[in-house]
Image (cartoon, rainbow, N blue to C red; front, side, top):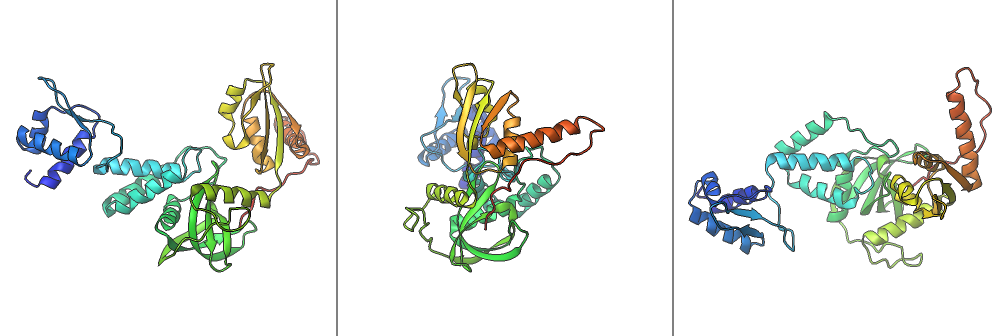
Length: 349
């Protein structure tokens, strides 16, 4: 291989495999001399890749972790595997898969050759993921389009379905994506309404970039007015305030008959952190803006005895739910008058 740049990329791809490569084997793979391999290794080190060499008959070269992450070189199979994995995670608002994962997917798909993009789409379309059922499913292409628009400061158009089913067309200046662990939301400036809006991404369809660039506006997060410094922290604060304004808080007070560590491992972080009660159990006191139905479901999934001390509407909902489940397990028992009240989850623009 006489093309030096191509040879360096091939050498880097080999070294990124987690093993030690003898110089002779690398020379054979690249059809060059061991001396050329030594020179190429020196070039990679100058570019910031920490290549470590060991001496002796069993010695060789390997890439080690450095202080900074140089650019990665991926072969076709590796690129497809990473893209499929990111798409699978991004399509469901899974806890721990946040905006950084979507940005990575957007960057990767931007540089994938068309032949690999087709393979990624074909593989994903032929795969049925088994995921938790308490989050909305989203087309990853929607997420990557929104993320690319926010990163590249490019106006977007899309169709949007509101909570009451009304269909509208929106043109926005995307600011940030926010993941709650169950859903994705887009914080953006709505040009037609001349105001900031929060959009549920599972209600967005047909998004496309207009090609029009924009200068980001200050997000109104500082004391209720403008002047936000910008960034993920401001977007999270704006989103939290926006959700709190749409739905009253639930002030949870729940006692669990299991250790705090065990309960915390099965509760979503958004519900708060339980504290030991000194009697082998624990108690959860927190304020949330989720729906009664979802909170009740998540409490039941902890799989231990628990007592809800408040709020009253959650107690009433659990009584109604418990009665309904009891009837479901008792064939022949007819339906009774439904008790308790429930309220819908947070609606957005």
